[in-house]
Length: 217
Image (cartoon, rainbow, N blue to C red; front, side):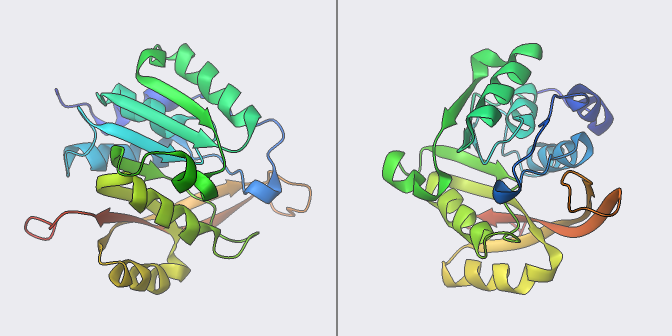
């Protein structure tokens, strides 16, 4: 596909409707247009993992990653979320950007997705999973499910403080993992217990390759 500049992609993802009342138990933090664009642009123009591919997002929230993948030429995108309001929001956002024909949004419990979905049904999974702050280990549960669905690659955000643990798990699973970007995730004051307007969380964008990497990319 023709190249799309990072700023063009970010602009296309701006103003996507997000949660009015995010659920703390689900760690519903919106993926910003800047971070979503960085992830997707890298996945496509460095690794060729989006255009013409079947792409999934586990815990899709507002649908920004699916929508962005569709804009970059994905053949098919599917977003999965346990929250009905997230699914409704994703459907509306996809319609607003004229990519409904490329995207499906499915209500399901990601933690049980291996019991309800055909495994290895997607080329690529791109996701911003729960960081495991509210439910210990939730990030790794999502990662294992993503690896069970993808045939080529998984892109996932994880707190930098958990890097060694995540990379060790990938090694145990026989998956090649590489930190391809270090980002600052700006978490706005979304919940009543937040005392500051926003908090920057250091996160890694990690690419998990399910095939033997070429030149260690």
